Image (cartoon, rainbow, N blue to C red; front, side, top):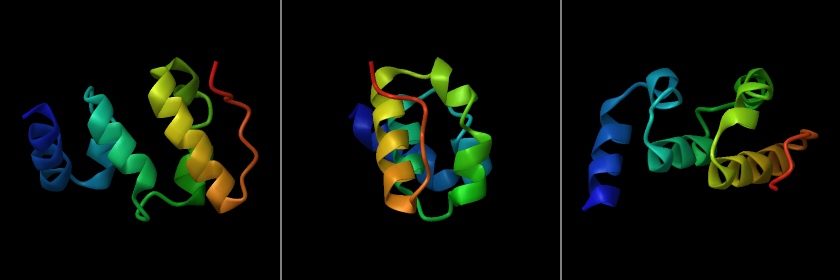
Amino acid sequence: MDFFSALEEYFSLPIEKALCSSNAIVKILCMMDRRVGKRTLLRSKESILEEHRIIKYFYQLRCEAEGIRSKSKVS
């Protein structure tokens, strides 16, 4: 049920607000969303360091897919 609640929240929010969500699933979905472009990923570089490990992982995957060097390695 938590996943479906997160999906509902994700689909009901604009992408900018979804990126600021406190729900990790919503943030992971944002990392996979094409509406989040290279500029947004680059702007998130510093703030992503404070995120949960799984969110950092998906951020890193997305950066690799976009050809962006990411300093935030999953630790």
